[in-house]
Length: 446
Image (cartoon, rainbow, N blue to C red; front, side):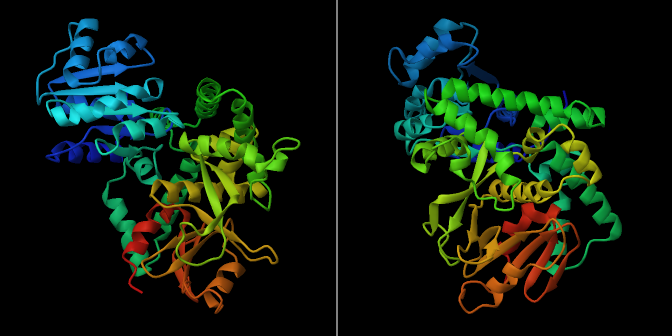
């Protein structure tokens, strides 16, 4: 089976090289490649790999029966499987499916203080359990958030060199347009990525077969698995509410007003009843929530209305799979998408920003048409970001930049299906550059 190179590969090597590294917890939604990446790293860097999967082998939940100190746990693992070898400084212990046994997090402190063995934990659907894990291991662990493939990782999977990142950034910083060939190649790849998303099973199948055939079935199975997990890990009454929210995301994104309306989910539904459901889906990494700013000014954190938000799928390929059966073909042919076209490009921009480590915020003024898709920031500036399905005029963007009411905003970014450009303090970039916007702004000398 072809291994898809991931950004976590570099991170894991750096983690091991740190002299005083702590036990690591790799979080993220199911099927994004956590287990595969960690096991590959472990087998390449340690003489002995102790792999324990709490879902496949629930008997290992007994290993803390005699306490959480390292010797007690190792003794009990050895009793359950005498073939496992524990050699100090040459052994890694990999606890997988942490969500099924979050109690093991209590042992991380003891493993860190003991220092003989490296430990990595991995889990999906951690949700509410993570608060428990956090309190049991605070100060004695490092967290790493893993997602499905971003566009850069997709380019690697398609055979492009890592230098493509530097090439994109150079174009962005110098405002040098891409050549006709570059635009054609990268827009085509970006369209493929929109349809497929970044779930490794989907991408791998596409690359091995060279065709979209079968990708929809794989995506639909992943969606079915998510629904099964909601039933398994969510508490009682919340299951139905969480599933209702989950299933309504494509429907509500298709509307001109993409603000998520709880009242449309079920009769008599109220925000206070559903707030925990949205948090659960976000914690599970299934969706991304984008909150409405109270006013477009710095700082971003704390300056938003938690009752107004847009909800996006964390993987755009799965959003496409939730649409009608013809949507994938239509997207490939750029036809019949109507309102979905704007929703898809907005969703993939939200996904790219989230994967780059950005918070998601938008703005909609109640008494006017002023509305902006996303906001980012530099050290001194608030930066509005508009995602356009067509490369037409962005009135709200111009208003925010030119009005004296918004002193934190001096320039903006427009993401389109066209080439690089700059006009009236609006910097225009192709969709396929969205994953680099945070890095671009970091070096923005204004």
